[in-house]
Image 1 (cartoon, rainbow, N blue to C red):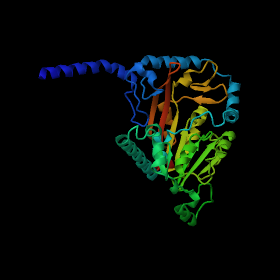
Image 2: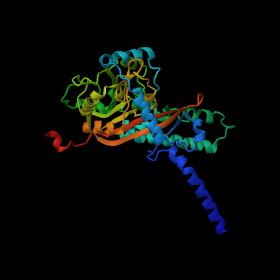
Image 3: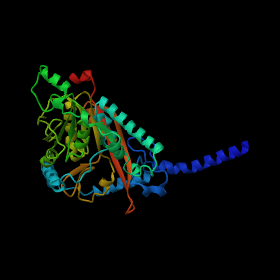
Image 4: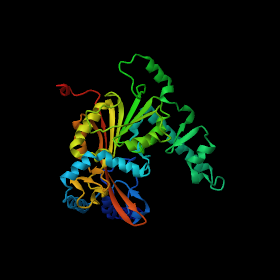
Length: 412
């Protein structure tokens, strides 16, 4: 009996040992924990069963091929005169982009609260976690107590069924519930009114009565702003600023049905203009969201932009960053003649894009006086199941905090 058990364990171990090289090839040894994703490709034969696989690890051969491709497509550079034009007229190209595409090009970033729970104040994050557990519990009860015959639509509409039949006062936002009766604009919040009655040392500004402030830089058509606003309307005291240097984009935000000046202020602003004032004082922001924005700025101007943004954060405030990583598929697809400088390209519509490394991101934000909380490469495999095409996506995600106390030598 013991011998049979040993043989079975040995056979099982051998099978796992044979699988290990393939598993190592597919999943990253530096796999971050969810919510960055938990769909791991362990069997390459099943690659086309899903649209996206998380935490991919490249082989040395794949890394070398990507490097060679980037070197090849950057060999021919854009003429200096045209480079100057793309820099001078950057806002023109983005305005044309939004005139053409309106708000139809990018999808709403409903993943924001999973990747960046720091967007919300702690109390609201705890509330959302509680609500998420509520839905998990409701689903479990539905699975245990209901059958498809008794409730034929339960398993088709999921949370919507619960929403319409069980909890009339709850509204779903990105799969989470909030109480419609609790929603109130900042101006109606009693706590804010009490604060406004106190002596104010500085002039009033948009969101001056708020107790929690967020700035989204490069808001575009509002694909981040409106998912945030949907949750913020149930977060008394919260206020969202969002800016873009494309006036067409800001108009799209302001004309949206969900835009409400009680919770949000959208304005045109060029973050590259260091002398241009913001419509609020320094050191009042709890969160700055910088998602797929810095890559559109000339590399020589990035550090100045980050330095200025760091001054807007209050001590303990967070800057949340996500952008294109080095050798992303979109970089390797550029043809010769589109490279402006190393890892910096111009698209066919005149908009530009840079591809970062972890070290570059680390150096940029720490030089601005921020503390690195998170800085990682998010490698995923995106597939087109219909065309049987595989695309290696690479993004950099980081979280950087302003220290509560500035270093002593910073004042010298």
